[in-house]
Amino acid sequence: MTPVTVLDTRALNRATLARQLLLDRADLPVLDAVAHLGGLQAQEPQEPFVGLWSRLSAFDPAVLSGLLTGRSVVRTHLMRRTVHLLTAGDVLAWRARHDAMLRQRVLGVYRRELDGVDLAELAAAARALMTDDEPRSMTELARALAGRWPEPGPRALGEMVIAALVPMAQLPPRGLWRTKGGVRNVPLSSWLGREVDPPSPDAADPVGQALVRRYLAAFGPAASADLRAWCGLAGLPAAVAAMREELVTFRDERGRELLDLPDAPRPDPDTPAPVRFLPAFDNAILGYHDRGRIIDDAHRGLSVAGERVVLVDGRVAATWSVEAATVTVVPLDGFSRAERTAVAEQGQALSSFLSDGDSDRVRITELSPVRVRG
Image (cartoon, rainbow, N blue to C red; front, side, top):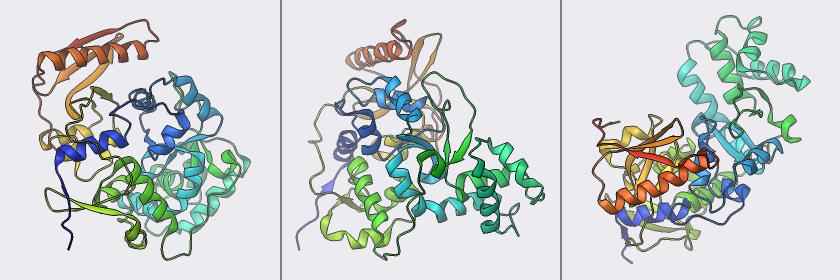
């Protein structure tokens, strides 16, 4: 038997940075970057702009806004029942594969409230209501349905319809650069001009195979548990089994099997990694079950608490915030002189980006007194 190569944490870190476009800023069109990343987590509407600024060599936020208004990129519930920015093609191809997971996740929160509700009947009523293509908030939609289903309450009805039963798009101005707007929903089919692709009857799960390939291209090498943590689907075992021969395998230091695409980048572990500022809920961290490749266990809770973080030598080393046109960095541990200089330089660039060049102020505080666990 050929021995399986073991990839240590640093090797996995550099692979992640390369796949996530965080080792070198990429010269990619914005639409191609969104596609490569398999979407960007976007429940905080302005955060994807920072995520793309950190990844692309010449990112213009107006381009992403234009893709949203032009319907090439869509805000919708998908992976893990969270709001993501996805290309129109990806959401149409992937949405049906996520249907069962989305329903189960909503039921996991509202099972008692929705007990006895015929979900097929609820979906049909919601679709009939939305045939006028009038954008509605979740509250408006739920109130319109509550006369027929008064018991669950508007929150449970609205969540089930919008996040699970009827594929929806959140319309601009929600998610546009420097624009505030409430969530207004219309069916994806009316916004994009066609229905989502129907579920595949093929037991080999071709859509699941596409998800595996796209995930590994942007996150690999990774374990099946990491894939599940990214998309919320149950590991896609049929898809992985069907494509085993086209994948390569490694082990991590814990002995877990890691899957990967044979020609995907796996840089030398000693490759220098530049300072990068990541937005809240960035998928470079949330896209794994084992996040140890990029964040220490002692700080894991930061990744789900909505903290924006700074990568130094490829790892989470600080949090950051912005107020009064000043980027404030709070280290988790000490910076060397060189690290402090690099963080300040990148913080100045971020401050300038966020202020349209009006400010390049950055402040680095003393060590954070808080150690978040989770």
